[in-house]
Picture (tube, rainbow, N blue to C red):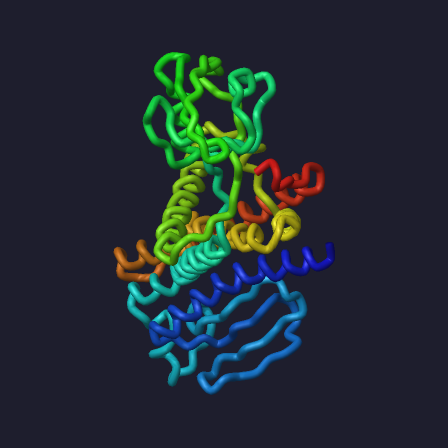
Amino acid sequence: MLGQYVLAILGFSFIIMVHEFGHFVMAKLSGMHVEEFFLGFGPKLLKFKSRSGTLWGINAIPVGGYNKILGMEREAAIPEDLKHRSYSHKPYYKKFLVIIGGVLFNAVAAILMIMLFLSMGVYEANTTIDYIDPQAPAYQYGFEVGDKVIAIDGKPIDSWDEFSSSTQKHQGSDAIYTIVREEKQLDIAVVLEQKDEGYYLGIGPQVVKKNLSFLQVIKQSLNMVWDIIKTYVGLIGMLFKGQLSFNQARPVSPVGVISIFQQSAAMGMQNFILFIALISLIVGIGNLIPILPLDGGHVVILAIESIRRKPVPKKVLEVLNAIGIIMLVSLLVIGFVYDIISPFNIQNM
């Protein structure tokens, strides 16, 4: 159990560090000076300065991290010899790249983690029968565990999805299933039972682990990332439209996040890797919400400043920042209360 919590903390820290490293890399590529890059928060325990002038180190609380880019704090003093390398003196497109760098790196990390997850093999249902419902037509008409369904009404099927779809959407209750049993091919005529709006036979498939080719891993990882993004954005839209209750889309505090990570670690390393990828994407997308101090808020400010050709007034930024912090802290407090009185169960997600 302790090891699972250690993995959970490391997984959460990894996601935050990937995000911050995205800002760091984009700043470096844009010719900006990064003053500090630290793992964790709190008092500095270990530190050293690189030849580039960046102070690297580890803080007392090794969760998350941060980097400090010269000139991002508007009131900070900038040495004359470093002005050309400060954030505030760079063109807007370079500032934009730095701001979205964290999100981009979260997305890239998610793709790589999902590729790793898929390369370890995926479990897939096939058309070999592993379970028969004793109250279903399959039992009544003599199907046996180990039978492999290869066709329905003479139409070949290659996957469980094809079997399920063909059965549920069958035209009428009479169907002929072609099976292979002990290397012999048999046809079994069945009167299907109607269930809800379709038909069913009443069997469960055999689930086997399948290794994917490199090209399949790439294709499926990109498809999974796109599906996760669409689902998450769709859920946010449903929440604002009132189609999703607050309880269903409840916020989660760091306590809840660590608990969920621990539960995923308990399900095995492969599932843990997939969960890190999922959270990395959620962190990236969540940072695009257009409120300060999130990256999305900074993007909005940059867009306004690029149009006005002058900085947004300091007092406006302070008000917007205060509003954003109040909103985020409120969500964290609500999430913390929920995590105490109604802890997340990953099995119900």
